[in-house]
Image (cartoon, rainbow, N blue to C red; front, side, top):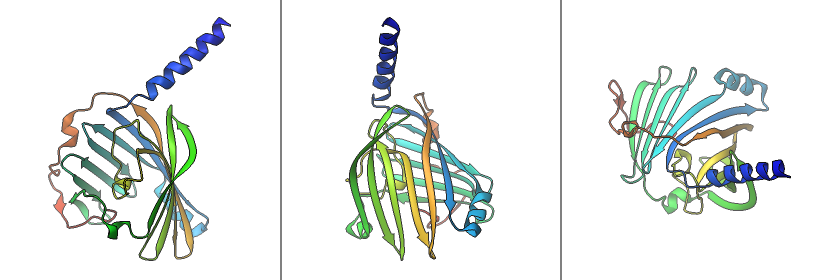
Length: 222
């Protein structure tokens, strides 16, 4: 009986700690892509998994991605200044480039073709209770559906959700995106693999572009 009570106490304590509002730390994520088309799948297999690291503190977020096929990317968001800096280093697509974007509330035009529905399903991911949102986006003849499990207990911003309406809440811990292009489905799954509470150096969120990067009006994906 004592052993059973001890296990329950430990489990409860872990759950309680995980559910506190996390204001500063580091998040590791992994994205995998797949397709039923053998030709497309072969190309996606060459890219492999895309790993990213997100640092967050004081309403600022920095995400770093490094992949041999897609190159390096750094995305810094300052929620208070409502600015986003994106730096890309891809020798196959223009080399070192950067762009700055204002983060504003999405307009009616932005929200056209987008529906966001909060579902009843919840999922426990790394100790965080996450609510599901179903998102459908249609633009330029391409439709993307997304099932997103997010938590409101992590105070970080996600680039993909900055264009969503206020109906969406929280930081995505798991996203499944299905996109149809030229009659072929591509499935992208992005999931958080680790969340660590630790002190983050404020220098991580410096909005000054790195030396050697050329300014462009827009970077693909912004």
